[in-house]
Length: 231
Image 1 (spheres, one colour):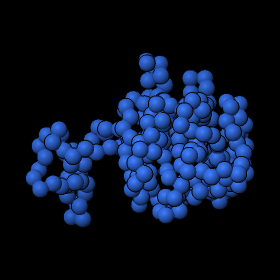
Image 2 (cartoon, helix red, strand yellow):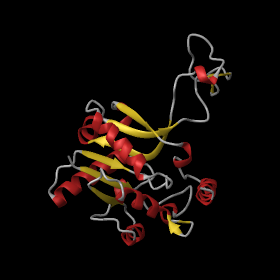
Image 3 (cartoon, helix red, strand yellow):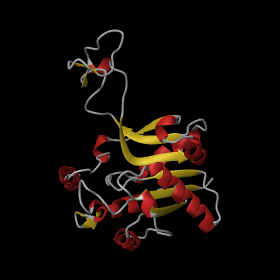
Image 4 (cartoon, one colour):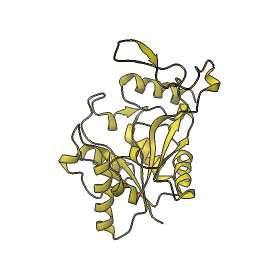
């Protein structure tokens, strides 16, 4: 069983320019994910997939392996990560002569994740061979069965998910999760069988909300800094 860890981060970032190597409490953002990945026992090797020489250089300073650069056509604003995963897996296999069984992608933008979160998601995938993808998630602040609304074609607001009877207590609503890209554990065959993870047989690995914060804006940076300073 060979499990390949990937950290995929392109050079362009519109929400937060230079986000992937932006300093967070004196350390580049990418460094937190590299350190977590390298300390996750079930991962056999960790590589960086990037089109940016600058990101590659910073990643190497923190012990990451950058065996190849990502092609420009896989580093655009509209490029899906699925082809990026396939490129990373196939290139790695050719370069190192190994057969990868699972790919585990860990997003740079979730710096508070721990090895226990990644390891737990991987173990959940290994424990059920019928599962194609395991994704980290957390219990959200809102539930579409209880307190989330959408606007219908007539312009009126209505509950997003309707049950047979109105749900009047949050505790009675079906269990839902918000996804966080701390880890996507993907069976190799699923990369070729499905065009996207949402088409595959998925399971959720729950992780604490305070470790699941996903940095997408400058405000998110401030939130993570606050959490780090108040552990």
